[in-house]
Length: 424
Image (cartoon, rainbow, N blue to C red; front, side, top):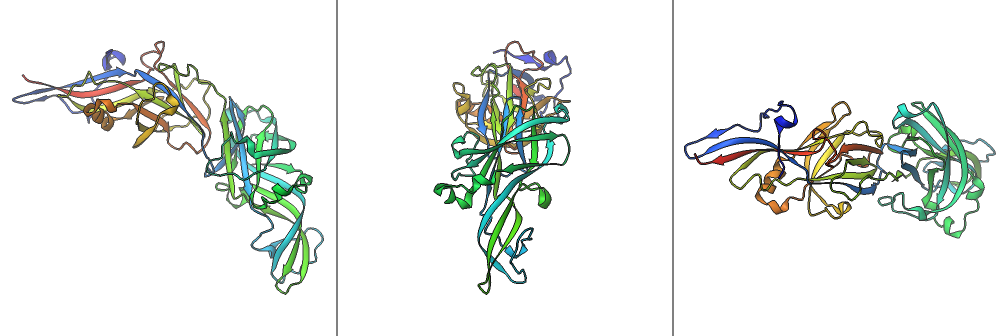
């Protein structure tokens, strides 16, 4: 096994942490503290794919560096308003709003989907005015909000229209995307039967160099939530049975909205257990897998004081965007070396680690795991590193791998501090 000392790797600056202990001497034994680094023998990037993001505060639309992001919406039947007397007439009206009404039916005139912009991902890379186009699709069948993903293209029946819009780099941006009301009036029997699950998908149709955040139904408050503004004539019946009508525009908030992501970014050296780079990402999730073998180093007579995985972020890598900074460590449950995408994550370390471009090195404490592996060597399948919240946004971050051409100071290492016992 190839071992390297801390002083050799980091120029003599190594020192024992306060929680690693010190040398021990007794009448019948002598314990010597050993601090060493063990190379990672297997590393890989695991692809998870599109993660449900319906609980996120923001929706993301656009294309950037291989990432494509759509937005899906579902709206309830707009004729079933709780307070139809709150309709404000902006056209012909025969209603008397001194009494309460129920809505019998409605005739569509026009509809507009309104999205309220928040900011761009990687704003510094966005030019002030970036033209782009978006296609709006009617989702023609019901779907499960928990499992819907970008790949569910079969839910889109037909495109409503192509719309040109302009993305402006401001903190607050309202983009109106008009819908073709004639299409709504031509719903066939199948679509009409789905009146309670009126749903749309907005997709960037032109190449864009940005991903833009919009407020979601959970993050926009009353004034910034996405709405479907429907102008229609509502036919009413009051409490005495008198019928009337009112033409009005009502804003309907979605009952469901989510970002749907697809990342066409190709992992370099995919399938290799000694890659040059590893990647972790949010939204369209990727995870990093590591394994190092120290069974022959720490025999049964020794005890482990401290075990850490050291990894270094590649802040110069162009594959990164919206660089997230919070990571969590998990125990891997079985072998994954032949198929990294099949890796199964077990128990979490219950600790969150931060990495920033200014300080790209992070040390992940895996001491409890290493002690367990020390007692049961066959259980060492390594550890997995993933985003702390994989459903929050879209991001991608790069770390150096264990390829032979990666410098020792950048490649991942297992640091093992153990007490070696000997009889004097």
